[in-house]
Length: 397
Image (cartoon, rainbow, N blue to C red):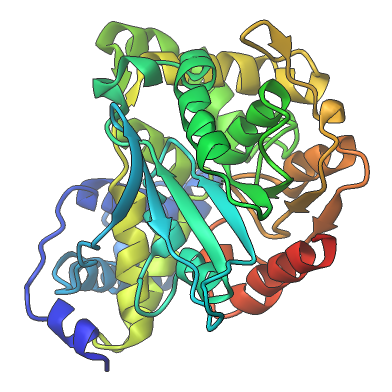
């Protein structure tokens, strides 16, 4: 174990925030087969063979939850090289690692994360698993946009303002500071949708575009998709409650995410119960769970525009989404583009992400055998996603 990893195990952690949500979802998932048969879950159930099996499974889940709740690992605060800031938004620089003298990066990469969860997933365990640090190690100057507390920044109050007011300031900084090397934009999940709009609004800044698990056709994915869960939430008055609060609590979003596959909670915590607490695998599990459960509350304007324009009206796929008076059509994108479509993504169905690649003429489409998060954290992420991305950039320079 590295010294940094040992240090991170010295301070105990107690994570209570998502406990009841996890317990409720796991219990519902384990009881679901019996309920679907129209049978009750009463005292008699716990005495028969199925009930005993369910009880043993739930005990395993509870053991995994307890192990996670009390795990001592904490992702250490990182020293950050902040090269630009405006309000809550800031740009963090991961300098290229290169043996060349003077230092000569291969290219610059502007990384735009989703607004929903923090950007930590891209640098999840810095010493062990980090897309951003891996790219820097391959010779790229990487610049990560951090949104900060969007509820405290009027220019991040909604998507229209973020794209038409905040982002031009950031791109103006790049225009002034741009070195004589290519500048690529990389958007992850929702960040890819924003990247597509940025390119159409400001086509003279970026030299190429990288879209990772970017939703575009919000009607793709079927009844069990996240998009369908969002539409159901809207039908139950979700947007009205958000308007009343003037923000969307992160817990509401996490419940919608988890509701697309309630059994996943039972599976992952049952598996975690058997992990070696001090292993790198356990540290990574805890880091990812902390990231999933640590998202911030979002301004009502962000939620309203994303839900209405994307999930309800499906404007991006139809070429009807408008920002700052311009129509955001993927067909307008002429830059070299690399579209990553994770084959096992439950948050962004493959058909949704593939729609963007089909609409961008000449785009390269990669379909790794990964899920939405495993592209960043799994053992095969480097071989199936990171290295092909590096090879694509190298080939088009």
